[in-house]
Image 1 (cartoon, rainbow over the protein chains, first blue to last red):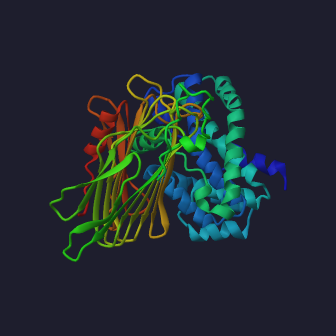
Image 2 (image 1 turned 120 degrees about the vertical axis):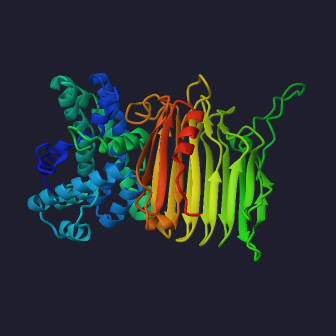
Image 3 (image 1 turned 90 degrees about the horizontal axis):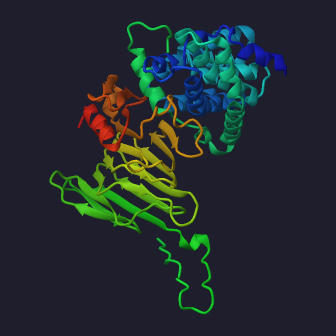
Length: 224
Length: 278
């Protein structure tokens, strides 16, 4: 395995379409809930320990060799709003295209064939990490970093927040990222013995509600 | 169930009273409800076993459904308690369960996480309404709640959950609540909410944004397989809370609501008025 592969996978320029999504930040800015670096940090921390933990668990399990179709069903059960299921599958399809070109593998081919409209993005990312020879922990790190870097980058554009301040927010979240990765990886290790129910299912009511509100906006800067 | 006696007061005794082990002071109680469809078509309750603070009352019914009210006879759960309710609706039966009052999670006299487990089972052709009153997490309380529902393929369910974080003007205790709904062997919904002291990120713009009451109303009906419920966004007229009605990835509709208080959450859930096929 190559640690450099993780940098390729987690690079914001990896062509998997993530840049078009704010992770709920656009709706939070419009509602006046993100106004500066401090409120961005709080938002990111909340997203990280809920949606981020769930996504990291799914990715770690996929990277560890759990059945990706069962994980895809588990992702559906953990995503009660259709706006977020649609986004996750769309991003999953884009991630699949990039991953198959970058780290071709029969496992990616099989998932692409079984879910032609796209599997949930964290599942595809986990399988891409596996194809790249990376470990479950690596996949979880890629996911949690994306969970907070997406909103931070979006808020730089939405609020004209100083990019230095936004990057400092990400740095301050580092120990939270470590903690969530550890929790996600530990949960994924229980899946072979206890089943998919061992994976985290932490939800954020407002992320669900506002994602569905945002999807109905006639004009928006970000797709989600 | 086992209801341990209170610690014996040491006043008037020469020797200091032995402190009972923590386990002996904790409450363990399992209440059971089972409904079956009688040949007449009306549903009966062959099992109605209350336990500890979970007293059960049979209510009059005019439409053939079996009706039960859970009466909270004590303030529970408190630290270290383990309470459980099991309800089963047998094939073709119709069971409606409500509660007389809110459930109040309290800190108790000794530290420890309390558990409150609800296990629901709905057989083919049966319907279960599980409509308790809100769970209120008093300051200092620490509760893990699980609600596990097993539905047969043609079963129908109406389930409401409301969580109120702290009594009026009070900080919240800690609550972790997991709701898992399986239908015909497949997981339809798996969600965990966690709020309160020691839970990172719970009181943020991504999760609650200062709201102190959360509610969900879940309706499962095979009829939604053909015609899923349309997405609707609901806002309280006075700005006190917001909600969405969404179809799950399966024949079910879910209302998710957040609001400043219990009353506002209930209003949002009621406003959703999900059409049911029965």
